[in-house]
Amino acid sequence: MTTPAVPATPRIPEAVHRRRWAILGVLMLSLLIVVLDNSILNVAVKTISTPAPVGLGASQSELEWAINSYTLVFAGLLFSAGLLGDRLGRKKVLLGGLAVFGIGSALAAESGSPAQLIAFRALMAVGAAFVMPATLAVLMNVFEREEQPKAIGIWAGGVGLAIAIGPITGGLLLDHFWWGSVFLVNVPIVITAIVLMVWLVPDSRDPAPGRIDPIGVVLSVVGLVLLVYGIIKGGELADFTDPTVLATILGGLVVLAAFVVFEKRSDHPSIDVGYFRDKVFSAAISVIALVFFALMGVTFFAVFYTQSVRGYSPLQTGLLMLPL
Image (tube, rainbow, N blue to C red; front, top):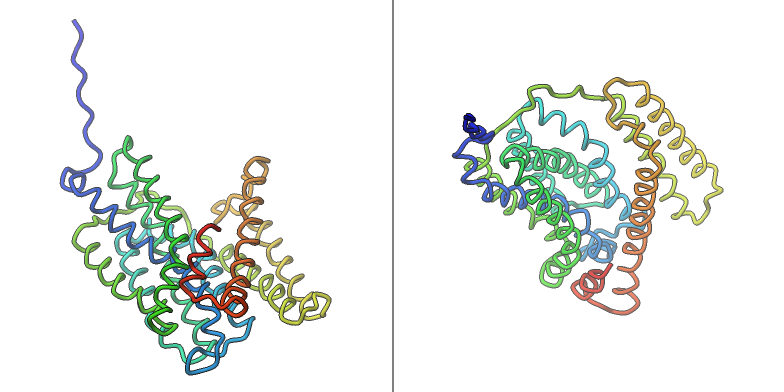
């Protein structure tokens, strides 16, 4: 005679399990705006480069920094922000990140100079860096293991959708409003997401959170900023042999090399550089990096070509960018 198997105790509380898809919807809304902001600015660069009162009269390098200040800060803080969410509580970090992102968006919309726009874009990125990893951590905490692959697939699909609709959304706004609308549109979405999150999303923490790697974060951000500054400066001067350009690029490479050495010796690295010993992993990362390097460069200059040379509107430009 065999003893009947005892049903496994559900890992997720019943009240949370019942509203799991609604929670995923709120997480997707939060994720959509922070990822969309990586691409929504692309169709607005031509308008922002126009002298006041239409735009800010931003130069090519200032426009590149308006884009890169967001992506560099976002990438640099991503790992540490995830660890802080594990320690402090994912819901708290999500709410705080959304609030910072919303405030940064409102300030960016009212920027009076290119320097202000660059600074406020960096502030937006600080909030975005806390939102993205926390959404995935909450997702893993509200879905049972058998449903997690489906939920993660929807989450990842939302990232792709946000990147694709960013230029179209920006084009629609610029066809009817001023350039700051591409940032101001985030504010009501942030408010809606915060209200729904307070109502629906449970808080959670990691019982054994990892240690934060502040030195690694500083080295990675400083190295990337120096390297990118050198590349932008070289393009601005049309001379990559200029001493300032060479010194900055070399300095960035040296700092990034120090970052790799430090991460290899650290017992709590931001990035486990040991993964790069895997040829398949390294090849995949290299290909993705090259693709995005080319994509962002083509997108940046294609906007000026389509709008200044071909005479297309921002919306038409956004639609032309969609196949990319």
